[in-house]
Image 1 (cartoon, helix red, strand yellow):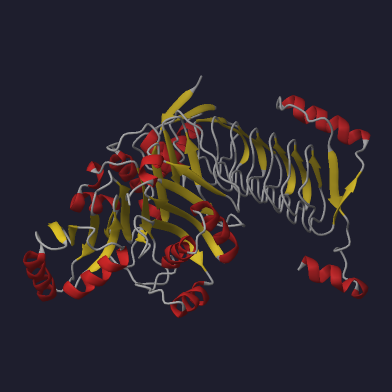
Image 2 (cartoon, rainbow over the protein chains, first blue to last red; image 1 turned 180 degrees about the horizontal axis):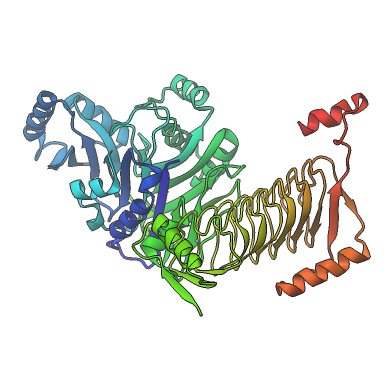
Length: 314
Length: 230
């Protein structure tokens, strides 16, 4: 099971009310994934790294993380920070030039926290429980931006906690996030291969390998579209997955069509969801939805893609 | 007289109970409004009633039914009309995977496209697709007919026992042990009647596919055929 959703506002503007739409989509799919819910929203570009990290669940560790943060925030690399439920969200100057530098620095200064998202636009919020509970904790319906992806999880093999919830940020690649419905059956083989190449895995969830794979292909110089296409050959098992970058939203569907996926596109939006019910509940009835053919993918760019593609400016 | 059911703010069970209640009190023409892609609507309808879904429906709509007439003014999800005994289901839009799987009789019409595995294991009846269908349509069908006015995907009619598949467009590939044969005069007449009844535009010509019957009996000499099929 699991439910995945994606939404891209084609009308332009950096502050479209996509959180409200995506919450309604997630709620319609909550019965497909009662274990956890999560949302990745792409907001306006920041001139610094925006980092969301989960605080430790242990009270003493969390307290020490909070104290460390108060100490280092406001000068040096950290521009500012705010606590938000189970998370701390902070802005880090580009004096740390790459995501790897940011991660290294954070793991030195704040070894207790776990980075959940990093980029110039991406913000991932997820937790154990239903979409309603996610809304109650973080008011995700108030989120604005250009596009986003979301997930409701029915856990099958790995544990139910915040770390194993989706969306996943692809560590090392700013603003790249994925959500997955299905099972990557050659996960262990791929994971071994990537660990030998030096990639680190942060969870036991097979879906995490999608982001690792895409990061590896993008780093090797493939375009986003080509990397997605090659994943159709390199992943075994059942998958409908969505991937998003600062200016792109994409779906990929396995060759057998094992997992459902519906896509609707109008002049105003592109909406993707595991089931049509999510599209109807959130967006009404004045459009057709289609089930993409097995073994296909689709990529859409935001209306700001040109400007965003130049970000960060060198 | 038309009886109307509004699905808004109702769980599926309540909608189906309302539908059954209406049928029990003698309603014979029922319009279900705002179905919004809900699953399992109109399953196991056993009376000769007309049910119109005024929008898209989710999975297994009109499954296991016997003798009703169902219209979907939108698209349908997976497994539409699955295991139907008799009746008609007409979908104006597209149908998800496994449309008309295992039906024993009646007619399923998809005016748009059908996704993968349409009409698998059919044991009778007719599946008419106005557009194209995905891979493995008619897999292991045992009786009945599938009519595809557009194109058909890979492995069409794989391992079929009996029945016939008609395709108007191109076929990506035939499945194991299915072969092309010429249409008979009766085929032409019955296709014309079928398309006319449901007002589905006819393609220029149809090709007919039936079982090659090589898999009917095991022959040691044809071990390779069996290996490929299994």
